[in-house]
Length: 133
Length: 287
Image (tube, rainbow over all chains, first blue to last red; front, side, top):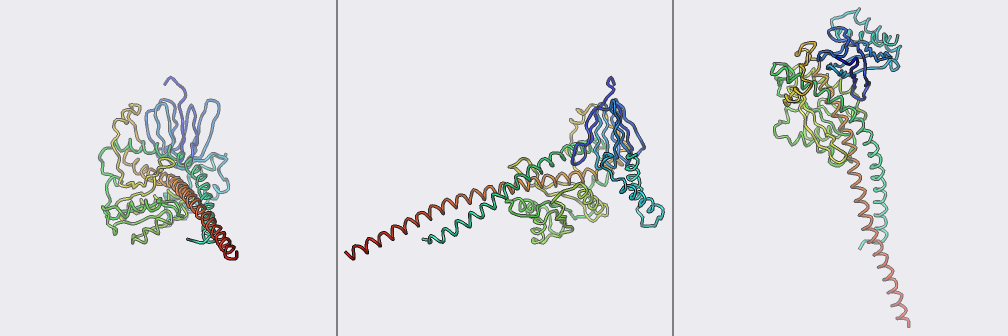
């Protein structure tokens, strides 16, 4: 616990998205929003669409994190992300459209609506829009 | 002996072929470099995924989870990854052989999910049931393709349409060594890695949500990453195999050309000698 930093690695199937020493990282999981500081107990959590905040020593970075899981160890955190985007990779209009589509689907609920899917789509769109702000 | 004209025609045709094989070799060399870089990048993701799944499974022990038990159906789904184009030596047929030569399998129990045309053609010819064909996927493998495929497979598994899922592809060891591999995806089987587990920081890993629920969510991702990784490796192997095949073809052509050049020169010398003999004989007859 002596160190204020821990190593963060974010890996996607086709690239290493981020690698560096950070002070804190925050993201959304199936159990709710969590923030991870150095010296956290070892834990594996599943990602829910949301914003990822990376707090570096003198900077803060945001990204939209959509699916994957996180392996938290005391001195190292690895995020295995299936889908993750930096703000400049997001298409604002597309996200807005997707949000409206998902809301529409949830409102006009029919028996054959896949609620789970619509909700995930909504969360994803909201994460995208949020991270652009 | 073949006439000079025949030899010459044959030689120039082989020279044409050699130019093509040479060009194809160069193209696949370039493609191989790119495919190999991609495969290596996806490997770190896959390794991490494998370790995590392994550590979960080694901790939960023998629980009755749907992804760890064989399904009720005797059907086996096999994802077959081959190329769309030939001229890659034994690359495609080796993968196909994994299925046709497997003595433990009945042909009726196997359903094929074919990625790449060559494998589909060969298996359809031998009478296998082709459930899906995805020729365009292998041209440029995307993670989204793997996600959709694994979602469909898991749905079929959950609906008891299939009992086991396999993956047949060519694993890429290095530029010259590609191994046709048959991998069992579901039910998940892991070799025990208890030693590694202890070594891994010594601390016990917690899961949120609980183990069983975590398995529900992680196993599909694990399968997707396996399929994706296999596609990346298959592309690298395909180009490696083609590069080798074309290299061999080029040097074979070289050999035939030099053989033909020799024959051509001999035929030319023969015709000159014959002409001379005729002239001398003619001159003698006159004199």
